[in-house]
Image 1 (cartoon, rainbow, N blue to C red):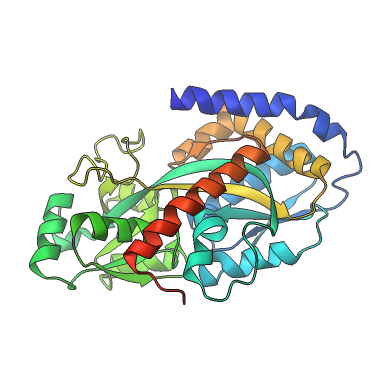
Image 2: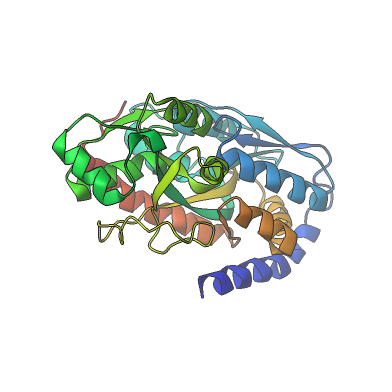
Length: 324
């Protein structure tokens, strides 16, 4: 049902937006910059490069990915919010940049609600709970048992402060009544390096950026954070079925433009992305990364941001995460 709905949304968006694509005939006249607010190699980067290639082909201009990491994605997001609203600078936004950073950082360099024009969701992705195989923990139950036996002895890495991998760990701590300490990194790649090296024992990551190491057997996936198992890892349980009922974290990625970008240009970008995601080959590439392709209207994306902002504000407050 969920996959059918996603396909319907993507196909409908591609058809309904053809008029918008005709409404901005002079755009784009030069290359477009797609800012990724995290280092290369993570899920945001991988999806952005796929979208850049496929959407650029349909727009008739190259889309250049620019990595601008730092402050949980805030540096890159702020750069886009300050950019000219002409459609030539776009952001690959995340749950962190658009919903949770405002509750994590005392000084926000941009207004996540007013600084952007949502374009479209691109993909949903589960997060995955990973351990170094040398730790000797093979299940969520064993992890909880060890964490309770030696409070504070385990650390978990995440890709940023306040992003969905971080919140995945905080929600786990809350529901399991354990104290596994958080160690934030500036992206997935450096966090994975320290997990492999044993500097941290656990990691929460977006599934796409972790798939390679999982397939290689370098890390062990204990559970996924969504309410249903994912086809890419059919033998890996959800956190909820592994012992924590009610646990759910869903990560998403979407395109945004600076506030004030003409609707005709927003529509043309959205049309190109929707058309790309409707192609079976592109869908397969996204799914092979461990994500689920999604495309819809700017209003639908705006509602996703609004709903998750309300949900995670409460979780952050309950977890006692203080503004930095």
